[in-house]
Length: 340
Image (cartoon, rainbow, N blue to C red):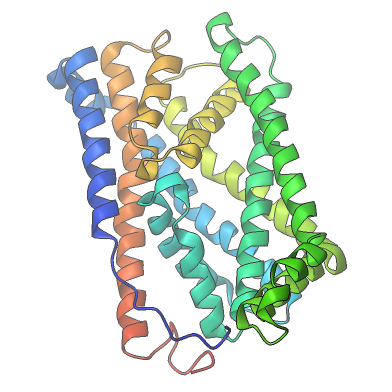
């Protein structure tokens, strides 16, 4: 099953259209329901540019950090990948994540990329799933930490952070159970595939995947710990973007401001709508309604969507199209690299 033919990558136009349409509709509602569009545009013109540029810097810089999350596990399997190449791939994967439901579209691209670099598909899948669960664990840990050490939280926000703490604990338990289930599932997989014969390609692939996954978690636990720490750093850097945007409005004390930024960032991960469109704006509206004027609130949502959604889609989409064209022509990111 590791010798499958290369899939034909296509630009996900439908996902892009749905994400952009829903997000634009949410912005239109906000414009017309909570503030006069002229006031919003005036507020945007007055917003300090340095906060906007700083926020965009951290969001894009997070791609560099996130690349090492995958690179760490790939190295554990003997595959060393240049940091800049990982940054390019994670930029394209981030684009797919933003235009697919539940932020889950980037994993397949990374699996395919690692396959082209020389890993078996079972190995690549183990790396991506391991990195993904490490990332989700780090996100839950970040939410738990930021919510747990907050002091002086306004009463109208306390319930949000209580929900984050409870949700993070439950999510960590689920992720831990899933990890253990994969590692301890050898007998289950053997039983499931017992009727297909020992030479079943599916059985061999699953056995290879489970073996590689167990190897990464148990035999390369140091690499996996670094992977979790890298993912934690990625989210911390990424949410500094929202933190800076809020800083431009001077709301909350710094730690609460960062915790609010984390709260905004969690929503898209669990949204069935690409990019968390609508749900993210709704949470922003609910949390900031008491501290920002209507035109300021609308301006923040426009700025935030631009920084974490529109610009990454444009840049990541351009990278993705570049990769599709290179791979369609039989080339890799760098000419002559990889197993082809």
